[in-house]
Image: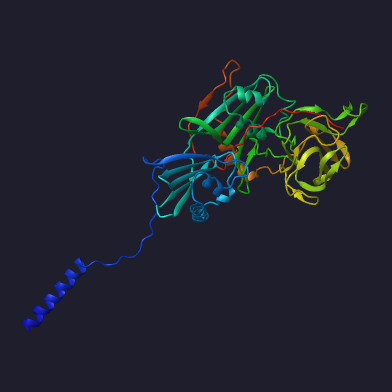
Length: 434
C-alpha cells in the first residue's frame, strides 16, 4: 500500500515538472505592426514629385523600386487605400535602407496622409493618419474697405477663408453691390496649426457682417434632418430658393435692361446679367431643377438651361465646357457645378451670361427676392436661442478705430462636421455678350 502511494506521488511530481519545463505551443496572436519614426537614423530620404499623367508604380520605379516590389506594395495596401488614385502636384516621400524601400508617405489631402512600412520581407503595412494639427477656435475680424476678397488678403488671413465666408452670406448680401467702405465681418472659426504655423481653416461656427450699419448674424447649427446648416437668430435658414449668383467670384460687366451691344454695335435689351470671371471658373446651378437644354449656338455659345419649381427657369451662356456627365433631362441640385466659364459664342472675353425667367418672362437676377426655405421647427427654437447666445458671445462690435487683428477665444465643444476649406482662385477676367 505504501509503495502504491509512493509511486503515485512520484508520477504526480513528474507530471508537474514536465508541465513546467517542457516547451508548449501557444495559440497564435495577431501582431499589430509598430509604426516607428519614419526618419530612421540609417534611412535615405527621397522626395518624388507626382506629375500630370503619372501613376503610382511608375513613380516608384523612377525612384529605383523594382516593378515586382511596387506591385506587391500596391496589392498589400489596397484594402487601406487605393493607390491608383494619386494626384499630380503632390509628392511621395520615400525612405530607403540601402536599396530596400522601408517607409513611404503619401499626402491624401490636407487633413490626412498614407503611411506605409515594410516588414523587411517584401510585405507592406499601411494606415491612413490624420495630420496632427493643433486646432484653436478663434475670432477673425476683417474691416472691408474695398472688396471682401481684397480685405481678407489685407487682414493677414489666408485667402482660402474668403470663399466660405462669402458663401455663408451669399443668400443675404450682394458682395458686388451692397458692400460699403467701413463694413466689417467677424467670424468664430477653427484654425488648424502645424508646427506653430497656420495651415488651414476648419468649421465656421458663427459670423456677423456689419453692412451699412445693419448687422447680419448667422450661426451654424444641426438641421432637423441631422445635417449642419446655417441659420439666422430667428431660426430662418440662410438657404433660399435661388443663389444670388452662379459664380463664387462676381463682378458685373453688363446689367439687365437696354444697353449698347459690344459685338453687334446697336442698342438692344439685355435679358440677363454678365459676370466677369477667369476661364475655367465653375458655374453653379442657382436652384434645384431639371436640365431642359444643353448645347451650342453661334450667339449663346455653350449654354445650359434649367427649369425650376414655381414657373422659374435659368440660362447660362458662353461657357468653355460642360460639367462631366451633364445631360438634358437630368435633375441638378442647387449649387451643383454644371459648367465652366469661357468665351464661346458672341463674347468679348471670358464671362458668364446668367438669365432668369418667371412664367417665360425675363427677370433682373440682381433684384430677385428669393424666399427662405427649411426654417428650424418651433420646438427647436429654445435650445437654438441658448446656443446662439453662447456661440455668438465673442462677436462683440469692433470699434472703428481698431486695427485688424485676430483674437483667441476659449475652445468649447460645439457641433462639428467637415470643414469648408477651399483653395484660392484667380479672380481676373471679364467680358460682355449679346
